Image 1 (cartoon, helix red, strand yellow):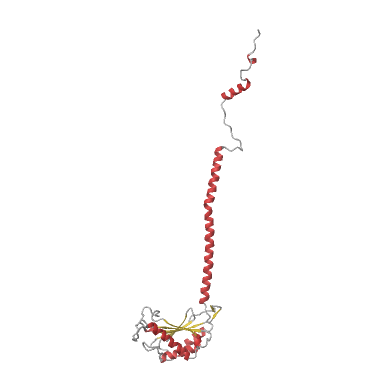
Image 2 (cartoon, rainbow, N blue to C red; image 1 turned 30 degrees about the vertical axis):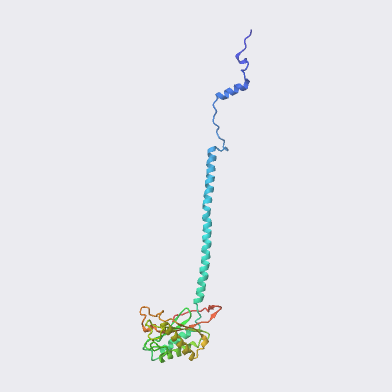
Amino acid sequence: MSSVPDNQLAPPVGGVEGTASAAAMETPELPLKPGPGTKTKAASTRRSRYIKKHKKEVQHGSWKLVYADFVTVLMAFFIVVWVMLFDNISKRERIDTSCIEPVAKELKELIAGDAGLQSAKPPFDIDYSTDGLRITLKDAGEPLFQRGGTTLSDFAKKQFQKIAAVANKCPTHKLKIEGYTDAEPYGGGIAGYGNWELSAERANSARRELVLEKVPIERISQVIGYGDSVPSMPQDPTNPLNRRISITIIPPKIGGEVKMGGMSPI
């Protein structure tokens, strides 16, 4: 009986597959090295976290852009409103002095040429208000009215003659007349009659005098009494200089606004 070599013996039970399975169980599994285009799990996780974080930051900061746009638009709106308001105020305050400047100059010359007033304080002041040329007659050594009375003195009548003469050179200009008193209580003995009533009646006496001097009555737009509420010398409310009459020559209005023009100091 011939012997059979070991390498020719019949395969064990299970055949070749059983042998391969056994070999696979005995051989340890080696980790696979990732290829150049292969993403590892850790890298994929980091990438996912980065994307989520980036999206969160963009969503969190977007409201700032919206808020900045809103603030810019709001600021532009208020700038436009402010410019329009400032322009309207400027139009109201600009006045046409083409007529009243010569009037002011003539009044100053009348004062300077009066020999009886050269050594005394001028009986009236001349300045510009927001309405026009304001002429203020005051007690400057010579009273305009008797104390507590409403009848103009001869001295006051002479001053109103001068004012009426120059005011009539601007026939389209309205006139506003205002009366003021000092803070001395009215002692006329009439119940309910005080400085308010006294100042209003004195202003009305001035109106009547201007009308007598040929100023058309329709040119007088306002007659106002302020009592002692607006003293010219607030530090000394009982000073006689607080007793005064103001006549304002108001330029005509065109299109609802005062006609524009330059102004020069008096």
